[in-house]
Amino acid sequence: MKLSGFLLLLAGGGIVLAAVALLTSSLSRTGFVLAGIAVEVLGLALVARSHLAEQGDRV
Amino acid sequence: MLSETSTALCFVFILLVPLAGAGLALINTGLGRSRSAAHSMMTSLIVIAIAAVVYFGCGFSWQGFVGRPAHFVAIGHAGWNWIAAEPFFMRGLALDGSPASLTVVLQLFSVGLAALIPVGAGADRWRLGAICASTALLAGLTYPLFAHWVWGGGWLAQLGTNYGLGRGFVDAGGSSTIQVVGGLTALSIAWILRPRRGKYSAQGMPAAIPAHNIVFVIFGCVLGLVGWLGLNSAGALLFAGVGVERVVLIAVNTILAAASGGLTAAMVTRLRFGKPDASLTANGWMGGLVASSAGCAFVKPAVAVIVGSVAGGLVIFAIEWLEFKLKVDDPAGAISVHSVGGIWGVLAVGIFAQIPGENAGQLLAQIVGVAALVGFVLPMTYGLNWLLNSFHQQRVAVDGERQGMDLHELGAEAYPEFVTHSEEFIPR
Image 1 (tube, chains in turn orange, red):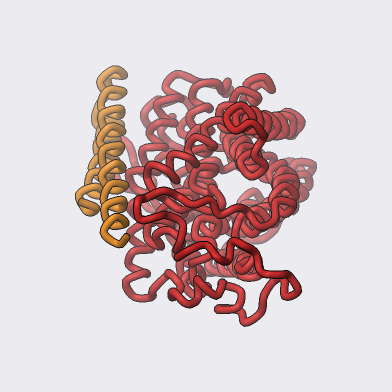
Image 2 (cartoon, chains in turn green, brown):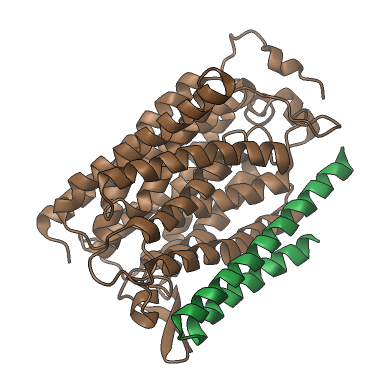
């Protein structure tokens, strides 16, 4: 779960970079940048949950 | 090129920056336990030393400066400047008062400041040897890479010229390059080290482990303000291209952001708990300072009050959220103050700043910068520290934590004549 979370973080960053580099329309660029951020938030949530679960196992 | 007056003023401002480091060291120590106080101060000194030496060795060669050698990747019609190509050990750089040489002096202090942030999150359980290795990774790789993107003419700084996004990513005083990079490293360290023994019950309820010396903490806030005045002013002169006439505005904005952050935190804690909480008020003050850095030269004083107030409020809610919901043990509140406060400061530039020239797309440029921090810097700093932990255990042994870091790692206590505190008997 932790690795998936970090891969999602990287993927989100990649979407943001691609949006900036490849799209020219302001609307679509903004939309894809926000989509990339959403993927990053998902990844962050997954990483946080994996650490919570690890901690629960240790208690 | 800076005028002679600007160069002299800039150098004086840079010499104030170590006071920000002294402030952070005092805050980290005061918010930790008494049995780790000497360890915390000693660690701070070592961290500043290692960060400066490693930055001298290889950090500057990755960070570079605008207009100096760098590696480019061509994507479409634009060249993406992603890392500097300077020789190691600052060879070829004349230390003659040029902007590049002043940048080096500022960075030797700033990289230490960034490296001090994780020390607060790892307090009472992070081994000195591991701190040294982790600091070397931060000063040698993570910090210079992101600082190049923002301050070294890298791809984030060029978002304006290459893609028409405002003036590109703007961060005059280091809300992102110093604070968020340090804060995300602090989050990685807190995750890797796990909470202190006795911090959470079997049911997951956090125990309050109070700050051992709140006088240190408050004095650290005052020292921090002086250091931040230097950091924001020098950063704005060197990286944001503003003239000396803006220095007064920067000072006013910095003071107002810190004051409003501290007051907001004091008011919120007074309303919620019946009495103002000193440590959270200090965190709110520092959150205001952190948020002030990015746009210090481009916002009006009334906006600085708003930026500081929002930072003060955000920081205390983030501290509670991390402690209660995510079970992240961060004794100094470093993650919330520096990551959350810094991200807010960066976004506030896009929302409020009036930067000379083209402003359309500025908010998007700032959002892209935040995405780069979360999407690239966090995995990088976590990965490096995770690897380090695989070879060299970062957390102190159980006995060391029970005994206290002072006795275990240094062989002497900070307060040998003190009686033992009740906090020493928290059930484990």
